Image (cartoon, rainbow, N blue to C red):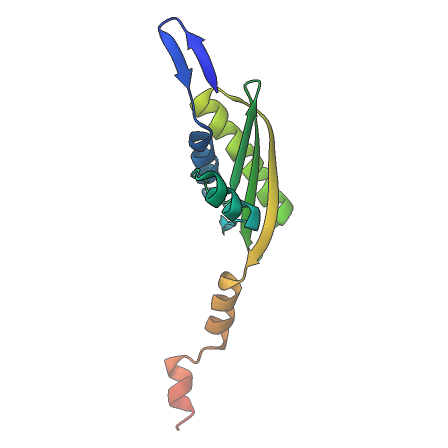
Length: 136
């Protein structure tokens, strides 16, 4: 995005918008992490451009379209998490940059089962009192 002001031009790089999008996404409750696709790795190698993991930004006519790829925590309502990601990303970009966000597309690439594994291990763990009573 570039804009002429009275005192000169303001330019905001796509990478800046991508970083803002990434932070807003990761701060959303229920998001475990970002996911990078194969195309993202190829783009980084071919163009030499810094690509924010799991985020693609397209700015045309001072409107942004943001694509984010996420991993959601197990047990979360995926549709609600995605709607919250869309809201957070849009709000963050518009507030921080003044760029209008046309769309935030969210792709869920996985579910993080770590939370579920911890609960399963905790519930099957033996408490000290149970361990002592088995020897009695």
